[in-house]
Image (cartoon, rainbow, N blue to C red; front, side):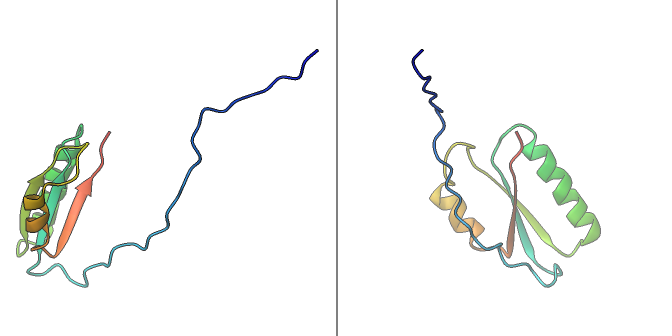
Length: 93
């Protein structure tokens, strides 16, 4: 009997370690952007996060940006994101 050959049609995994983004020391007076990638339920989750942030810290400013899930953020969205203190995003599949 001939030996069996098994093929695994899976590409090798590459994991690139990156440090976590820096955290804000305080939220008072900060500008926070919510970046909606328009995947299922991402907008609803970010709406809830934004409402809770405002409830807890009415002195912060919340802005909402949207991008297409499968595409990088357009240059104009990235330019606006550079003007805020923090960005919250959701990946909701």
